[in-house]
Image (cartoon, rainbow, N blue to C red):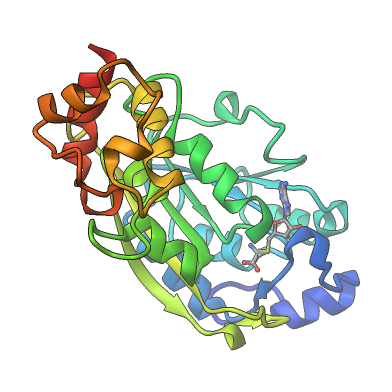
Length: 279
Ligand code: SAM
């Protein structure tokens, strides 16, 4: 028994199901169930929510989510070797865990969940940023999810919560903070995982805002931000050259200076620029 439920300790689960970690699948497992319960708690009250978990692996975080009271968990796991271990968890929590053996990048999960939905995952690092960008850019806002509580490499987490003027401020910070509140909920050293990755990690908690912080067309904003940061050390008038006719006038119309550099411009400034470019 493991402390948070009547299931076996995760080391025994891994040994009995032969779940040796595979690097290609980004498999760095969390074996401390007190820690996985803490991550589940970082997502707030789960009792009335369906939870989407990408990459449950042997199920440490899955068990944390269920023990912390999630109404239902939908777990999407690419590695079929993990399925028997996950079935044991499903049997211990009847009717509350659905497991789908699929690539999370290829599956439309929305039909499997009933709102309110929270996403809580210790993501495989190789697909984490791609999934985050998809969750942050749905066809309409507000999104299906109410919050995201996600593990990233510390360096990616820092880029997500970065403020203007910092070296890590860029596309990811603007994408995340334009329509959500994003903060680092906890940080973890490599030794928290088995096997330990080379880098430190952090859990970022995002709460979806009911509407974007400032008006802008998503596609135009993304275009402007991508071009501005493509040459982040250049002044805006040079970095944005060719984006629209009379670009200097549009920069001025947005209340910015053509000599400003991308990393100094707030999200409000970028939204004004996107509106000036669209107009
Ligand atoms: N949640 C477990 C934990 O905390 O111990 C495992 C986390 S491990 C970092 C990432 C998990 O994602 C692995 O189980 C891996 O097999 C799975 N995975 C990798 N790529 C995936 C994909 N494209 N779709 C779904 N699962 C994936």
